Amino acid sequence: MRRLKKFVASSLAAVMVMGLLGGCGGNSNTDTGETGTNAQAESTDGGTSGGTGSVYYLNFKPEQAEQWEKLAKQYQDETGVTTKVVTAASGTYESTLKSEISKKNAPTLFQVNGPVGLASWKDYCYDLKDTEIYKQLKSDDFALKNENGEVSGIAYVIETYGIIYNKALLQKYMDMDGAVVKSVDEINNFETLKKVVEDMQAKKDGLGIVGAFTSAGMDSSSDWRFKTHLANLPIYYEYKDKGIESTDAIEGTYLPNYKNIFDLYINNATCEPTLLSGKTAEDANAEFSLGEAVFYQNGTWAYNDIKGNEVADEDLGMLPIYIGAEGEENQGLCTGSENYWCINKNASEEDIQATIDFLTWVISSDEGRKAICDMGFVTPFKTFTDEYIPENPLVTASNEYIDAGKESVAWCFTTMPSEEWKNGVGSALLEYAQGTGQWDAVEKAFVDGWKTEYAASHQE
Image 1: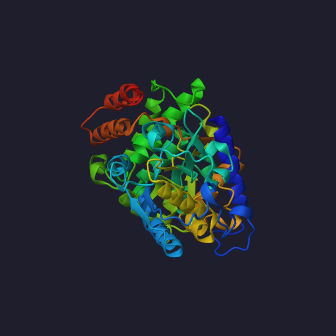
Image 2: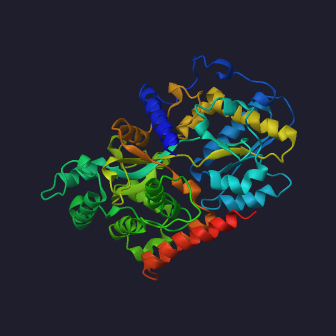
Image 3: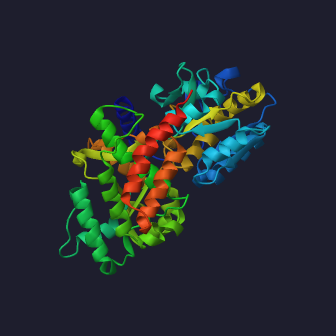
C-alpha cells in the first residue's frame, strides 16, 4: 500500500506538471514509438488482427456512458469491428455483470474494483501479461494479479476524492465578522472543519446559500459516497495503525470518527436528514453547481458535471476528508483506482483478440487518447503524453496537496468484503439519518457484517 501511494502521488505530480502545458490535444505529431499515434502492433501484442471478432464492453461509469458509446462507434466505423458499449445503472454493476456474463453474447470486456472484485471474477479473467496495454503501464503497481502471478486486470484511471468546495463562497464567509478562519489553510483538521461548517450553516442566509453541505442522498446513485468512499477513512486509519493492507475482521476503532463526519454532513446541509432517502447524486451536484452549498463530497470525476454552471473553474478547490484522527494535519486527498479492465477469457479467441485490439487503440491512437482525456481521466499509461492530460481544476487541487508533501489516503475500500457489506452499512446509515435507527446498527453492520461477508466470500 505504501509503495503504491508513493507511486500514485509521484505520477499525479508529474502528470500535472505536463498538464499545465496543455490538455486534451487533438492530432499530435509526438513520436510515441511502437505504440504511437497510428501504430498497430501484431498478434497478442495488441495490434489490429484483422479477424472477425467483436467487442462488448460492460461499462462501470454512467457519467461517461455517452463518451464511451461515441468512442465505440468511432472505432467500429474505422475498423469495421462490431463494438458495443452497455453501461450498468449506478450501484448495479455487479448484478448486471452476473446477469450478462451468463448470456451467449457475454461481455468481452468488463471491470473489477480491486482484489475483492477479482476474487469473485478470477475464473473469467484472461491473462493480460503479453498485451500492449500491460506493457504500456508506468508501473506494475497498476496491474492486478492473481495468486498465480497472472495479470488479471489493468487499472485504467487514477482518481482522487475529498470535499470539493466553492472558493468564492468560502472567501465570502471568511470576510465576515467573526469568521472562524481567515484562510483555507487553517482548515486542516476535523475540529476546525466542524467549527467552520456549523458557523456557515448558522449564517447561511447572509451567505446566500441553502446549506453548508450538499444533500447526502442515500439512493443508489449517491449512497456509494458514504457507504464506500466515506467509509474508507475509518478503514484507512485502522489499517495504518496496524500496518496492514487488508483484514478478515475489522475492529471499527475509528467508527466514532465516522459518525462525527457523517453527522456534520447531514446536520449542516441543504435539506433535513429525514429527506435523504429521496435525494440523488444529481440533486447534490445541482446544489453545488448552482452555488446553493459550499461543500460537496465527491471526486475529480465530478468536474464534468460541475463545469459550465454557476461555479467558475478558478473557484473549485478540494479539502481532505478530516475525521479527527491523530496526525491528520498532514493528510492529503484520497487517491487510487478501483477501475481495472478485465477481458473475458471464456470469449472466443477472435473476440478476445478484437478486445485486446480495441484497448490498444484506446490507449495509443489520437482518437482514443483524446476521448479518455475528455472523460477527465488521469491514466497510468506511458502513451498519455502531455497533450493528453485533462484540464481539470480538481486534479490541480490534488496535485497541490502532493506538492505540499501531504500523505495521500489509500483506497482501502477495495478490500471491503462484498457489495452486500456496503449495502448493509448503507441501509443502517439511512436508518440512522432518518431517525428510525441507532448508530449501534451502523457499527454492527460495519464490524459484524465485515466478518460474515469476508468469511462467505473466502469459502473454498
